[in-house]
Picture 1 (cartoon, rainbow, N blue to C red):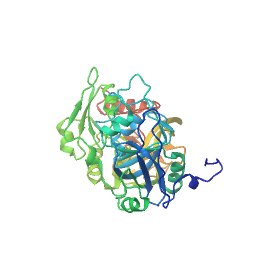
Picture 2: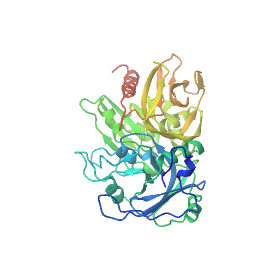
Picture 3: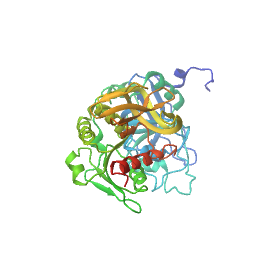
Picture 4: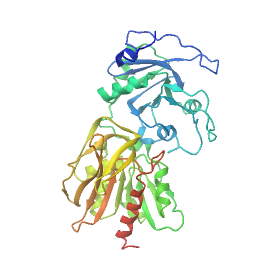
Length: 407
């Protein structure tokens, strides 16, 4: 039976009582497909077949809307403990290379796709995506109606999910799905941070030294700083202000990362020390949320978050609209268009998402109106694009220069 386009979405997934039918051989390989199942915590389930490692995995289900850049997505530490649903219908056609990783490993808890490419077609590919997922033990599922799944997550919100090739009874898998911990209250930065300080030297003449607090930093971020003459010391998430002083930091950077910013108390305290000492600050994503909490603002969980490389954001200072890369499930709660008094100066929302008016950036100025610190909720390092927000690294360089008297 073929499904009509007029059928409702719920008709396209498998109810809990429906058994998974046997699957045909994988085209072009001759190998029998291994059945798999995906079960959401609200009881909805989707059949498919194994893609990547066999076994089972659990995490928070989120959908990612990028049409390209799956390698950068999978190796982004911000996706720790999340099962990523690719909305692009065809995945794996560019394979996997050895240059585009954003960290040393794949961080997603699981991967969900609709149509798996049979063979990679990029000259840069060294192996298939399926092979890399297997090598790193990442359980995935293919053949899923990802459009129906995405629409369900948009309507019901991000939720816990399980994928299994070993337990194909949806009722039994559902029990374990509902036992998984929530992202609310989760402190995950310590899981993904470096254990020892790593130094990324400046390209060409060194102009500044920056302490980058690794809350889940992506490789491209210190590279963007290095291009601008910044020597970046990537410090563990538990770094103290004495650690910043020890390296002679001209400024401090807080990276992207996973988890609930309300649980990042150590990082909030560190940033407050830096702001009280007038140390120039730049934050990205999780760093933006920590900045908000350091200023006395609240944060909250978004219904389904922003995950993709196509979000329109307006810089309220320039009124310019940028197409930006996002990966966040939490946001800062701040009034738009109003000055906010803080112990460190006057704060203001600097960027907003044009899709839903979510706060996408903050700035802090002193009593004379001079910029002291700023942050954005999205990822301007542009891996895997777009490049609209690269100017923010130049803004940080200008902030560092002003703090050193224009040198």
